[in-house]
Amino acid sequence: MDILFLARLQFALTSVFHFFFVPLTLGLSIFTAILETAWVRTGNEKYLKLVQFWGRLFLINFAVGVVTGIVMEFQFGMNWSEYSRFVGDIFGVPLAIEALLAFFMESTFLGIWIFGRDRLPKAVHAASIWLVALGSNLSALWILVANSFMQAPVGFKMAADGSRAEMTDFGALLFNPNVWKQFPHVLAGGIVTGGFLVIAISTWHLMKGTRDRDAFITSMKFGTIYAFIGTIFVTMAGHTQMQHIMKTQPMKVAAAEALWETENPASFSLFTIGNEEKLEDVFSIRIPRLLSFLAYNSFEGEVKGIRELQEEYELRYGPGSYIPSIITAYWSFRLMVGAGTLMLLVSILGLWKIAKEDYRFSPFIGALFFWSMLLPWIANSTGWILAEMGRQPWIVFGLLKTEQAVTPASVVSAGELVLSITVFTLLYLMLAAADLLLIRKYAARGLEAGQ
Image (cartoon, rainbow, N blue to C red; front, top):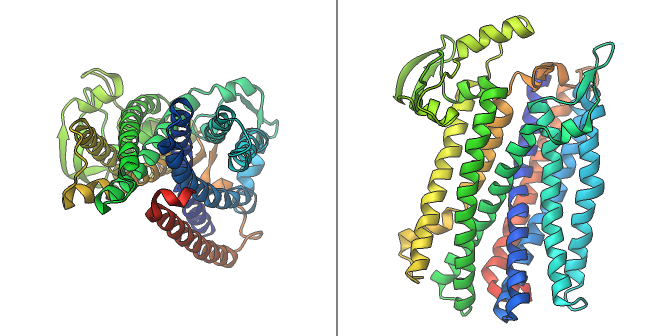
């Protein structure tokens, strides 16, 4: 089998699986810190019980997330050695800072928070969980600094022999505009992931008629407001990021819209069936001018099409295809936006129920609130698929193609990759089962689970 395909498949499986846990860690850490702050300010034991309950679920998710993240580091050297050689001088710096600063900070204060509950003053204990949340999100920031170099390389020069990129300006790497468009989107994605899990579990307990009804009403209120704020935030951040990508990776936007020809004003596709070989529509429903508005906040504005961009890239980078998988980019974008739209509607419905102080749920509304917890994972996963697949054929945009980055077959064989994919898949399925069973167990037990 093809080495490149197998290496990409393994990285896709492990990275998507790892990212199931990351957003929940980001969002639930902040949510737990908010609840503990409410306890410190009010002295109400209800908040303390909620801190212990949600903190337990946060710890379970955090532990599994750490294990799955370790595999990611090894893959760079094992399956992507040519990539590691090319960007190691740059890529290694933010990853090292993430491990030595952010993750060390996160894990240290997490230990203080776990074991210092009855030993520290309340305010100091609350500060420790805030530092855990800060460390978690700083970890995400440093990872995005590394990823942003792949999306929009800055602060480097090529080695004299052209074999690798060398860092020349760490400040440019840190303040890469792509970082500060990406990070708010990821942070908001974490908030909505945590918020919708809180809504789902709170709804389940309220429908069950738990004895901790008052506490879960409070949890429902906090979770719904948290999810609504996150949804607004993620929509705004995503819009800003899309406008930035228009400048840095216009082919990604064109592929996500199946926009074959340059248009001014440009239409937005509601539904398109296209022929990727001929680069033309088979069937399409489009809204005139809307894509220009999304790109420029104006109903006028040119958006370049796939054909023109392909010609430009051939002139700039040489012969070859620079068109990503259009069907992947197109549908991942729509799944992301569709899930985001549903999250907004569900959170508004939740706010309406809260305003009416109506915590009785019909079977349909209860099921809607409960299963809405899947929406952030759909949006997060498809968003990253678009970000990475829409950049193809580049692994480092404009500098290194993915096919040039893989470890040679003479070093890692197809059989070894198939074996490792099989082992990792089975291991991850076991970890997923353990994580779901533990979360289900402690979530179902109610507030007694955190005591």
